[in-house]
Length: 179
Image 1 (cartoon, rainbow, N blue to C red):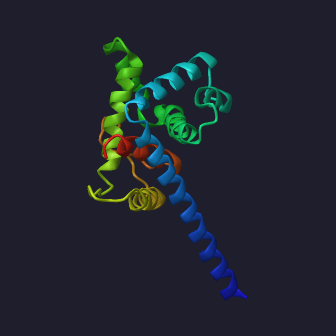
Image 2 (cartoon, rainbow, N blue to C red; image 1 turned 90 degrees about the horizontal axis):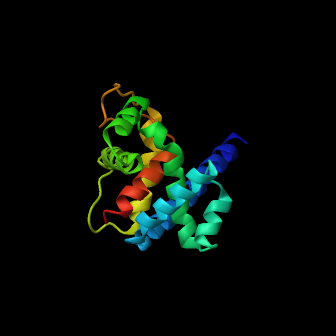
């Protein structure tokens, strides 16, 4: 009985990892397929969410018109929008407000630095296929926080412990722009 339970747990976690990897691969392909349009989609969703006061499925549906690739990329964008305050501390955000004429543009620059720090944890070969890259992203994001990553208040290069979804969204967005 115990052996059957262990086999079920192993089979379930393997299937779950395959589902996650498949999701990451689709999202990465969708972000890469946007090319130059990715900045416009990000800006459109940011403005729509800001005007509505929150990001909703209806906003994404209206912008993507049920296009599956657009919705996969939008999922990454919305995840990154919702978690920006977790990536960039309040003091840094306040400094960005004081020192820039376009807060959102300055925030995107700061986020890109932090996504790059996370991507540095991921060894990427130029010839890596999307499927292998998706597996690498999933594996890193699923395992990197088994030990807590604590960061000092002024260490912008430190990536603290983050949930799998934030880790994947950041890496897919960063790697999708840096093939």
